[in-house]
Image (cartoon, rainbow, N blue to C red; front, side, top):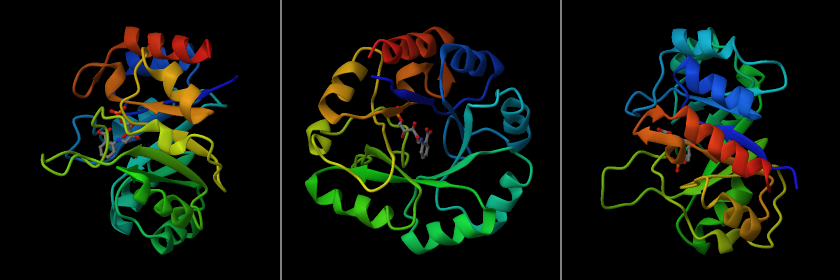
Length: 214
Ligand SMILES: O=C(O)c1ccccc1NCC(=O)[C@H](O)[C@H](O)COP(=O)(O)O
């Protein structure tokens, strides 16, 4: 089965090259300053210009205002906007209309009660990304926490929009995650880092090799 992979949180040419040459179909740039993966728009623009046609550059935002979106989208050649905050379906529709770009909405999963939000998000988003709900007790990021959710919650389910599985994926667990969920698109950040915010090109290649064997 062909599984498409997104490598998220790229900020260096070497790891970007590992993603591109390793077969990633999406590369993600984080525009959320509190993240250890946050990248300046000017650097992201330089990196995005290295991305060959056919690989989609994804800009990741958390509850961005229009001024920040304008600041980034105006200088970084992006193919897809990923919204990873508390954006409503109405805000998603507004961003889609304003920037004329498809939007992938993150849906945070902690338990079965969170699945309904996916159907609501699918009303206006072009794509869904299922991620683990951040732990409530610690001051976690909205995403990129290296935490997996219960994949059986997605088993056998169909969604009205294309969707991507993320949350705690690694070269070691990705085969099981895809087997259980039936995901055809996957996303990883922490699982290919040797320290928070630093992608290890060897781990990037290992993850992509594992995905290619599915
Ligand atoms: O990656 C981040 O630092 C981040 C910060 C704030 C919001 C979202 C963030 N990442 C979103 C992604 O798409 C990650 O790839 C996804 O959450 C999976 O991350 P991980 O569990 O570390 O593989």
